[in-house]
Length: 86
Image 1 (cartoon, rainbow, N blue to C red):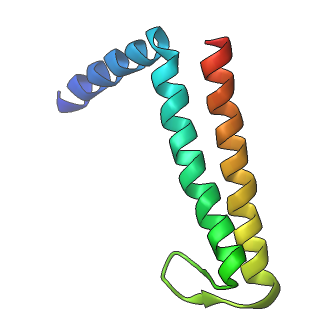
Image 2: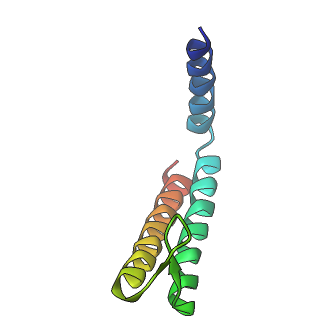
């Protein structure tokens, strides 16, 4: 029974985002700035960390940082798309 109530609440939220694409676009852009900025900061400092806090060194660390930057730019692009195209 609780799952049905949760599904209805999610449907209302999805309907809200469909009616207000700027909210979705701004939220996704904020997330993209956060993730992309994290990747850029790691590239500048030269210290990358994994999800457990272990330091990634060498090529693995740079690759993880670049993946974060690319993913952040992708999210920013999607957010701009939602802002412009609606």
